[in-house]
Image (cartoon, rainbow, N blue to C red; front, side):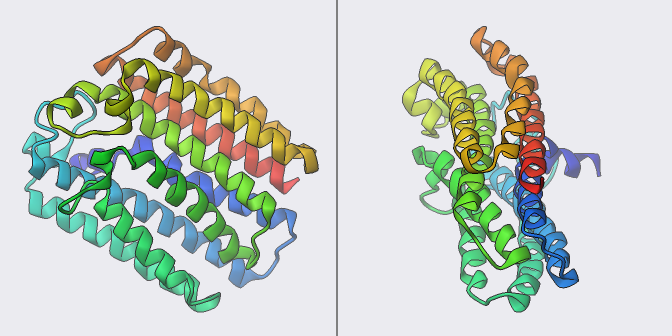
Length: 288
């Protein structure tokens, strides 16, 4: 059980929680009170977590069978370490995606069936990130995938599931969520530059190099502050989320000090915590 929990990469789960928390804050501000709609919020959380876990297991499987994780310096990978057979990890990914599909279907049946193709594309994107003959994660498109699917789609989809409306403020808040999720991926890929280079996995970090990847990490949080400020023009209570950016200072200091390899492992956890803090404060700001 401990192996499977580690394989699910719990430090990345804030990327699944934050979109739904923000969606709930938006729903509260719109005074949504239908019990059915709030049940959809629970379903949206299950979908989001299941997709995140499914993507993590799928990446573990695909990278493992390609040999990308043979010299990994990050957290344990099930297939790469040889501790769990690849076929079992693949099965776990399929089960997680299946759970997401089932609860996504429940949401679609109570709102609109147009959510079904969006869900199907999300699952396909999760698998093809490192899977398939030409995984786009190996060509530097991982950050774009995360911004779109764990930011825009996850947040706007969750808001629609609860309120059946999407406005400009929702899109802006979703952009904040997407940038926070991207920061998590950027620091992960910064740590893995040596191994990914050797394995010919051309992530964005490998393509632009160590120095520019660190600059990109800082830029993500600058953009988060800018987007929060933009939302705050019409909704001042959202500016409370700015306080959450203080939580990222320890991670930024370590990155700025030039930490590499295993030294960056704690930064992944710190970035995830910062993502959660900023996301929760953003949700509170939207709610009040």
